[in-house]
Image (cartoon, rainbow, N blue to C red; front, top):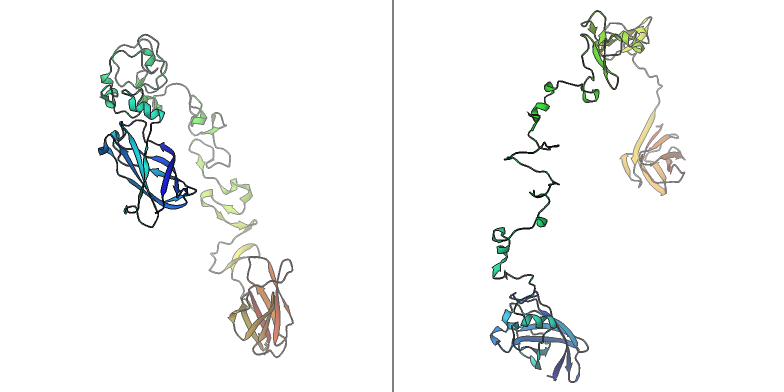
Length: 434
């Protein structure tokens, strides 16, 4: 194989955590430059990397092989992640990175044949922050430390382990203090209170009693003994009720009591005391007077346009007919049709937009132009036929016209509302002499 050498361009360590208390790190980005026969290399290569602690070789991780690395103008970049690296790999001593390379021949990384070790091994040096952590015996801050002063985090989460006195300034404003007036910004619930209260509460959201009475006492309207309930709350806004036989009427702000001595109400006051009420009579409805009788709940029609209706019950199929001076049930006269005998033949059918016959027989259809349908009778009439046609596509306004009707053929044309010829479905009937 041609002579291969490399010159490292950059090496960046990217650790997973800021302290080496973790048992692994995510790896680092390795950028290098590869030459072959004195010229920058180009193509696909396999690269093998070995991380070594020369002081404690037992801590060295397994090698990493990166398959099919693209090298352009001698330069390449790879991501190296030595999984499960022990902490003491970086605890001190000289750490080097050994690189081996082979031209890609299709072999997988599991096959280590053909690799050339590049020399010399590259020494991994400290960055400023890493140098500090390597010599620090006590961390100045530790985000993920498991112990503080030989105590776990749970020790400092338990208030029972704290000593000393908490200053008033560190207390919430909702905690009562003995040396200052207390103002509370949230509701206070005290199921049981022991001690004496000085003064009276000005407000109590969830008090169990008010003036010695529970809340249920004030929800019972029977316990109200003063004031009036306004009309807007369903009350009378009055201090007394009306006399017997009167009805309360609202004027929008108060109730007044009156006898129902005029039509238009559901009860009709007939005079003579509180029991003198009846249903509204038909005569109380001026526009219906003369045509209906009885109370509103049992009204029946007795006339039309002030003409009486006979009491005779009608039979099925009969109608009201006015004779003389009243409306009476009567039967419709039987319909009659007069005609003359005529020897005619009828052809009828349904034609689709395309000119295909949907229903009917005894004719054929052609469509020589848009909107034009020519119908030819299989057996001509003995004289000119009368033809009518109707469009049955009602989605848009359309019209059918008849032209060139004779004993053998007829032409039907379809138009839209703008007067343009269009294709459409239609019915037609042709009647002519046999």
